[in-house]
Length: 299
Length: 254
Image (cartoon, rainbow over all chains, first blue to last red):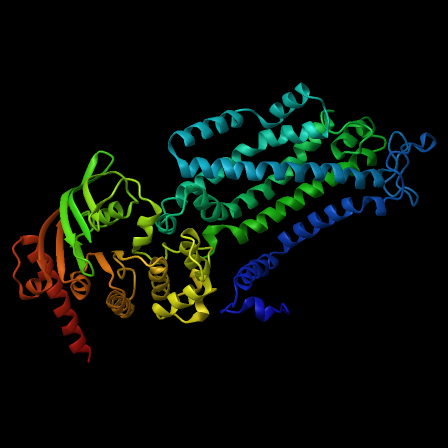
């Protein structure tokens, strides 16, 4: 089958797949009209690709120290200079992207399904289940995010895994609330009543009919939250609770270089810029997705 | 086929249906009319199992109904909702909406059944993979009717099936419903605030006011003006006035 523009945009699709891809293509056309969102998407994707290709693109081993050449200015040999132990900042930035962005992806993969499940079940089941699940959510919401994450990491062993667990633990409640609110408004609609009248069980209704409608707003919220997850991950790294040396995590890179911020400003500034660009890109992407996916805006 | 005896329905502290009784023989249609808020849709939702907060007796084919309905019940009784814009899942194609009852009840030959269902409600096969927002109101209501008929029920509960549609489309959908009833021997329980719609489909009419069934009469009696309750007379007068007004307006513009 040749996939053409006409095939995607036809008003009379001939199969389930064609209808679904046609809908996705229309959303993409709408998304493409927003230049800022496209910029966000391109930057976010290139950051991920650069991190994945780190072994190919790095000019130096990120762990090799060269003490005779510490705190060097950016040059042809070291594009972004070297840090306090003479390690190449450019190579460390690439490998650090793997850790920082990897943490973000891990948190999102943990948090989004959990929040969606808790919210949909609470919203659809109602009654005692709703009260129970939402009070648990409230308890987690009551803590400031970074403080709870810090306490959690301190109680465990500082490191990437516990940082991911800690951020995930503090990040899911807003998604549960969001999914619950959507589910509450959906369960009263006629089309869900019609599904109930087919005799479908509650599990099938939630999974196949309610959850897919909660998903778009959840995706938007997650994308917008990615920047704050990056900042939390970097913050934990900065405080020494995230990735441990000699791992080149962006936050940890700033932390170890902060003593040189006045004399050798490029050493802490470059990972800071990386964090800034990544956060901004995800924010722009999230804004663009909201314009496209917000269920209130399409008929 | 449908027997309701002393049905009371409450929403929280308010009782909205105060013990109504009605019978619908197999293959026949019963029309409930009344103003909005008179409790007529509530009766349908209670009978369909969507509203479990009721007391009294309801029977389907002489079998008493429980609060909780089993899957077999939903194969025999289906409902068409008032608003075709709200009763179809916005992210599901027509195909998916029609497959759903087949999957739930484990019926085979899905492709053939869906094609047949579309032709039964006079929809072209080209709408099969469209989303609801790509269809007109009348087409959507036809999809909703096709969906209700997928599992081959004997009873169709119709909740103001035409009130959200254009006048020209209303007649089409009403005629479709009448054809389907004759072909399949369906039993209808129809709710409407429009006496003309009810009289078009149903030989027996129940008039509701404030949660009570104040009068049950035949359509012939209604047409001839043999009514006993003042509310029935009121509704009838209003309808006649509207129709005469409409005809007068049509004559004037012709």
